[in-house]
Amino acid sequence: MHPSHFFSSSNVLIVAGKGGVGKTVTAAAVATAASRAGQSVLLVEVAGRSGAASLFGAVPKGYEESTVFEEAEIDGVRHGSITLKSITPDAALMEWLETQRFQRLVGRMATTGLLEVVATATPGIKDLLILGRIKAFEGAGTFDLIVIDAPAAGHAVGFLRSPAGVRDAAKTGLLHRQAVEVLEMISDPARCKVMLVTIPEETPVNEMIETSFAIEEDLGVHLGPTVVNSVLPELDDLDHDLATPAAEPGLDLTDNERAALATAADFRAGRLRLQREQLDRLGAALPLDQIRLPHQFGSSIGPDEIAELATVLTAAIEALPEEGDE
Ligand SMILES: Nc1ncnc2c1ncn2[C@@H]1O[C@H](COP(=O)(O)OP(=O)(O)O)[C@@H](O)[C@H]1O
Ligand SMILES: [Mg+2]
Image: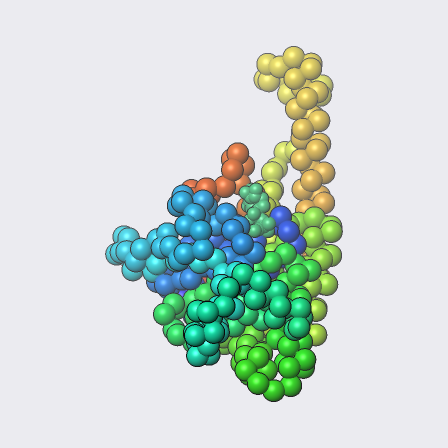
């Protein structure tokens, strides 16, 4: 699929998965790939400060919006911008009340503590407020694509369940309407899709399979391709007999070094076997396209690694079938 088709097929992409699997890294790579495809991207951090700014080599600007990549033309191709924004429930509540002509109320009220009062009365409202804020950005059309770095998986289901909960709890009124409008957005695949991220290990793969059924079947939210992050490259020749000098006479190594190499090769071969098993299991359990992102062997992930992951992501999207071809 052409990357610009992929990134314009939905207004909002929610990147979700178990904690630590690489949601923030994936969201940054998705934003980068989309910007290379010409889109102006808003990258939203929901769970407070997730460290996305530092992945772009930028200084985190707190809760203000900051542009980490300006629009530019690179090698004759127009690149879009990437803007980062952190959304908290408190800020979302204030902004929402203001748009609902409660400015005077908001102005006079001590804002701290207000949310707790409202939240106690209506469970799910914090998540709904954040989704409502995202819907407002989507409706304003300022950005071509909104990428959400969602809360960890268990919570992601609750996050997406919040509008239905609030809709049923508040039978009428402003909150009810907000919930209905957010539901319309998240259940329309042309407006919103979820990209689930995992690593090729047993527990995260199990969690992804469960989460994907919960999201698609219980919540009616559409899933995009899954992302398997931190995939180790396949290596040939790991079965070379290094332990006996006769097998590899050209290698000038001590017996200890040969033994250490043989142990490392065994370990890696074992990891690769497990990884293959998990990738196959995931493919068999979920009828979704798989995008694989390679493990980055540096000490940390920064702008260079994000750029590299975005290149791999773009190639993987190009290899996807066009919508309707399947
Ligand atoms: N492809 C990768 N290769 C190597 N390290 C990675 C990769 N993706 C993520 N990481 C590292 O794994 C850790 C968790 O990633 P992060 O994106 O913060 O996860 P999450 O947002 O899901 O909690 C971070 O230290 C990050 O640098
Ligand atoms: Mg994160």
